[in-house]
Length: 322
Image 1 (cartoon, helix red, strand yellow):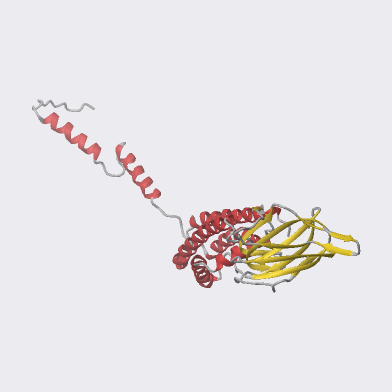
Image 2: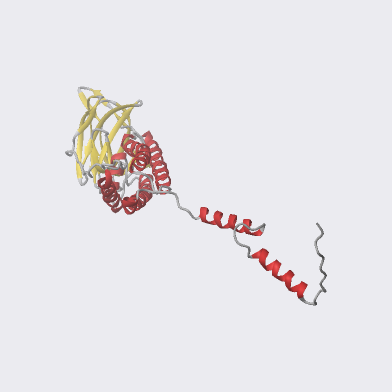
């Protein structure tokens, strides 16, 4: 079949108008068109996906996450009281700080169930503050304001940071039986022994005597060491004098510690502790001559006195004879 042919004459300006129309159509084509339309849809979908927040955790998943953070933090905090040296105490506080820091990082990244979101935020903030308080207490250990793990946790328990932690932990636990970091600090004590209490009597049986005067602001314990072995220890209250009789002949090094709250089980003060020794040893002798007997008696003063003739030096607390 032969189609009829028609001829038209180009009209100036019409072709340019059609080209402009086509260009505009390509840029604004509706879905189902070509090229540019597909690219525009993809970009819009990507932006929508990136702004979508993760779904809140189920109570079961949230409970498991809390338990995973609870165990190491609780264990590290409880271990502080088991420290037996200052070095160990610093190490255990450091481990507790690391465990709390890890718990804060782990829990802070969670999206808890919506009904406990405020309680969760308060709990994480309280853990962070508790960790900061531990750091300050570690400095107190360095200055000997705190001298064992019990004193550290007792002061932590008396802090406002602990009270905030306890309140937020209780609120979260009550909201859904959720596990929180366990911490029951011991009470703060101020224990004292009677003046003149003999704590150790391993080498006795002589005629010599030692009088100790304590004019300082803290109670003290004086220990005599002979040949690397502890011989005798006596407790001397502040503002009081104590006398040790029956000191056996020999040469003794004299150590003394002062402080507040004497823990007899640990044989140490728990707060404001100091550790010193007299630089010169004491020599006790018994002399028998022409039917006469003479022996040495000594007097020591734990505080600085005008005209005193006995110098003292600080002692590494971890090397102190207890």
